[in-house]
Image (cartoon, rainbow, N blue to C red; front, side, top):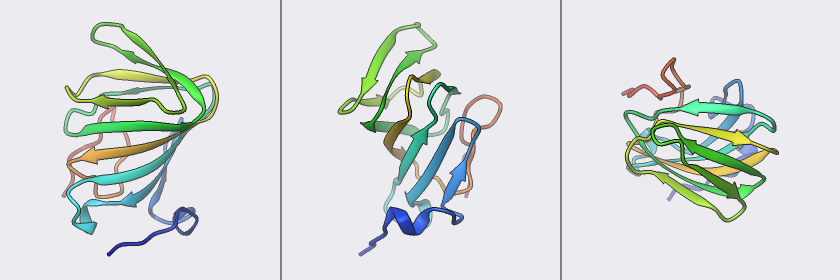
Length: 127
């Protein structure tokens, strides 16, 4: 059994910061669950372009408000508390945070923990 508290991860190597986000990684590849689980803050007023070419991601919004834009077809979806979106086709997208957003994110395959977005907006596939 694995039990972790978010407060115990803040300020450790399991808290990774990008320019527009902070990801607290509750479960990683090394935990052996087959997916990783993240508690992620998206900073208010930011736009983050992403394109997870090596991972599938599901996201559930638990705080804040913003929009996700599919950059393939330019469709825009409102994201607010209670909204889930899944990038089931590795869609290139951008997340626009109208206010600070808190998201619960699941990645498959799991991340190892040190990943940040590369120039294409993807997490590299690390061992």
